[in-house]
Image (cartoon, each protein chain N blue to C red):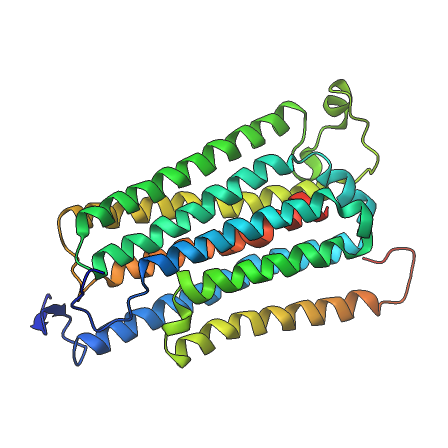
Amino acid sequence: MSTNRLVNGVQVASHYRDEKHQYASNKEGIWLFMVTEILMFGGLFVGYILFHSLYPEMFAEGASFLDWKLGFVNTLVLIFSSLTMALGIYFNQVGQPSKATWALWTTVACGAIFMIIKYFEYTHKFHMGIFPGKFLDPVMMAEHGHTVQNANLGLYFGFYFCMSGLHGLHVLIGMGLISWIAIKNMKREFNPKYFTPIEGVGIFWHIVDLIWIFLFPLLYLVG
Amino acid sequence: MAHHDSDHHVTPLNVYLKVAGGLFALTFLTIIAHVFKAHYLGLAPYIAFLIAGAKAYLVMAWFMHLKYDTAGNRIIFATGFVGLALLFAICAIDIYTRVYQGSIL
C-alpha cells in the first residue's frame, strides 16, 4: 500500500511526480473543500438576508436579545487565534518547530475560550425560553419580562441557532484538527520543506474566522 | 531574520503582526460605528459590511496566503462566491417578483 518515496527530502506518494506536484494537488483539494464551505454557509446567509428584508421588525426584535459585547470579545479571540495559526505555519517554515507547537496549542486554547463564551450565550437564551422555530416559548419569555412582539420570532432564532451552531461545530472540528497537527508537530513530523497538513488545517481555521467576520455584524449589529 | 530552507513563500513575522493589528483595529472601528449608528441609521448595515469586507480581504490575502497562491486556486475559491451571488440573485428575483395572493411565501 505505502509506496512513498523520498523526493528532495519530502515523503511523496507514488501517484505524484514529485514533492511540488503533491503539494499543488493537496492545496487544490483544500481550496475545493473551502468552496463547499462557502456554499454551505452562503445558503444560510442568503436565507437570512431575504427573510430579514421581508420581516425587518421581527429580525430587529430577535437581535435585541443578543449582547454585542460577547460577540465582540469572541471576534477578538478568533482574530488572535488566526494570528497564532498563521504563526504555527511560519515557525515551521523558518525551522523553529517548538515555537510552532506553542502557537498551535494557543490556537486551540482560543477556540476553547470562544466555545465557553458561546456556551454562556446559549444557556442564557435557553433559560429565557429562547429556542429555534416552534420551540420558542413565549410564556417562558414573558415570565422573564419579555413580551414577544412578533408571533414568528422563532424564525429569527432558527437562523441564529443554525448559523452560530454550525459555526460553533466548525470551531470544535477545527480545535480537533489543530490538536492533531500540534501532536504531529511535537513528534517533529514537519520541517521547512514539508508542512502541508498545517497549511491545510490553517486554511480551514481561517475560513472559520472569515465566516465569523460576517456572522458578527449580521447577527449582533445589523439585526 | 531567521534564514529558511523552503521553496514556499515565507511571509515575514512583522507582516503577520501588522495584519493582525489591522484586523483588531477594524473590529474596534466596527464597534465605534455601531455605537454612533443613530447618526446614519440607513447606512449602518452597509458600513458594518464594508468593514467586514476589508477584514475578509486581510484574512484571505495574508492569513490564507491567497496573495501568494496560484491563480488556479484563487479562481477555484472565487467560484464559490460566484455561485453564492447566483443563488442570492435568483432567490431575490423570485421573491420580489411574486404576485401577492394573501401571502408572499
